[in-house]
Length: 421
Image 1 (cartoon, helix red, strand yellow):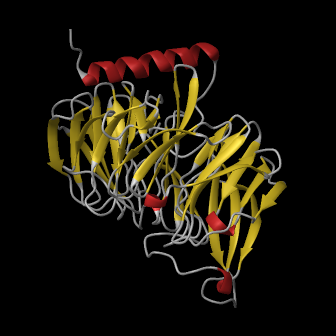
Image 2 (cartoon, one colour; image 1 turned 90 degrees about the vertical axis):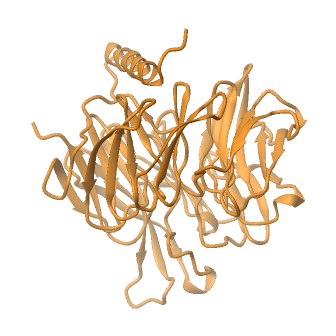
Image 3 (tube, rainbow, N blue to C red; image 1 turned 120 degrees about the vertical axis):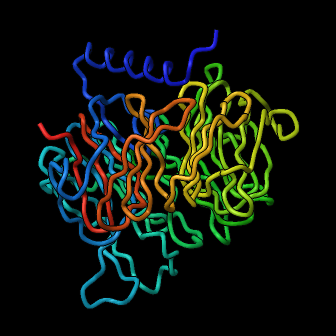
């Protein structure tokens, strides 16, 4: 018997919510794409309609620049920002970590983590910022990453516990990949124009645990955030880069398997389900690949279940809901694929240009374009638009969720969007 994707999705949300309610726990959103690292939220009652004067519980200005997405833990929102230095040179920045109350947007603390000097940083892409990686919050610690400008750990009161600026490479277009935390290893990719490698830092002190160079064929820049999965009791860190995706053992960085493709400036975070990881190869001609994760060594010829270049995104990450895989291309074409076969279920041009990754909650999918327009659709085998909503300003950061509210970051402000009581 084949259940519909929408039925499976709603059942998953219902079960997750009831489990959470039974334990009395609210959902945290502790890293890029949330608690399950794939854009799923178990929240109920999220708004489908909003605007500058509709369903805005609060709006607060955020100084400086930054496309890091909001992380939310225990009623606090964590962001990073790059603030121009008054009287400084063009690329001088104060690289900062911020904490705000989720209830009313009050700033709890605002701490300078690093000083970025104009002569020690290259120009970045016009769509990037000097504070693009998303903070990661776990066990009372806040990990912030500014690419080659440095990585740091703070406590949730804003005290800096350690910093490191020892990870050196030349980032093309600026920083991008967010860190992931596996046990005591803080892991991130460093795919620059000169060097390409993955590194794990000791989360307790910032010292290097292991560092693995990419293979020679990955000799161009990329920005992808890794994904953590588990296969037969073995943890795997799935890390896409230019021309190859590699699964690493997080304990020591040993390579478990790899798949070759053609693509550079890879950005989307992979998603995992049905025994496969799903990823896109970004620039060049982007392809979407479904790869079985039980291989060893080079499994390019044996473990790609399906692939397509139809409407594959360069920048937004994918969204897997039951048997359906959703994506939106950078130029605004939304597509639903059968996740097991790769068959197209539907495709629809929704307009706009996209960098933010989509969100799934309560049978609905939320897209956010670069000019402040949020489109909400029903998850399922027929395209059904629910609402379109507009905020002023650019929006390249992905959604955050707290309680029954969306947290949306624009180029100048942070919003809590919630149905009016």
